[in-house]
Image (cartoon, rainbow, N blue to C red; front, side, top):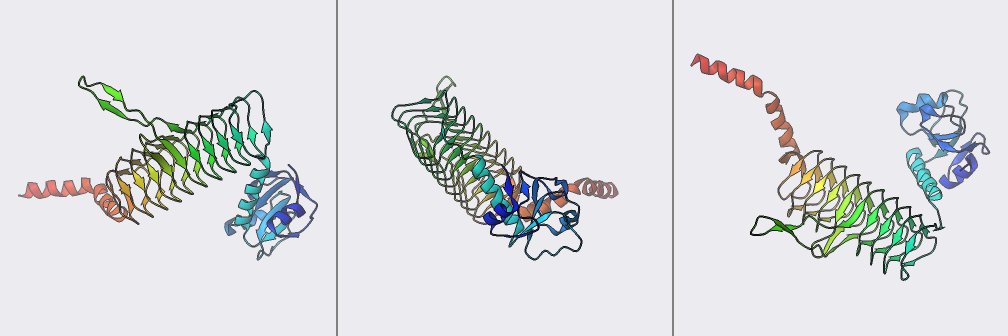
Length: 338
């Protein structure tokens, strides 16, 4: 796709300084800009690159005044970083705005879908599937029976959405994600063998949820596994049966959450965190990477370690831990004197 500086300025409500007819067809870092590319300057430490960049167009803040001659055409906006992000969103929308049903696919006779629908090749829509407007389903996606999907949802290639799943508006499900597989439920019998407990519930994703590539979200044993509005999941996360995650909580890669745990609103959970089942984590909690959470957590706590401690206590304890060899040598010397 090719855009002129004038067109971009119109999208961003910015002002052009330079040639409004110059065109760009790709994006670049300011230090790696080439002819035909668009870049931006938001961080002052990169200012020197605007005088050497070969990028055709650069988005800058309105208060930027060059101290040397520059070759790039500038688009001046209130906030260069925010405007560049807006432009990326616009670019993605245009790039992903596919419409129509490719072949071959399988769609059940009673599947319903709205306007501006796209269904990629080798996809499957089960019985009684209901899909809203402007939904984009990429190739090799499986949608099971009785699934309901809201407007403006994107499901990337190879994702699997099991039966009974409910997906709200403006959600994104990335490649390889599996939503609604059976929870890990077994009970031992008298022979010490494990019998499977039927998993009869479902998964609910509320509006504006994003699920990363390779992430798995298990259906509930009874009831629902629920991700509330605005939850963002990174790649390769495991969410077990009957977990509930509160609004606008974000979770980084390789975290695992065991069954029936409830997590509050606006929490931030780092990568490779392990959380046991049947506990409650409050609102606004921050958990550092690789922590192990085995207890209930109150609102606003900041935790680190395994088992996790208060963040400040962990750092104080770690100082002593690093000094343990010195402390042991001193104890040995004192014991010798006795």
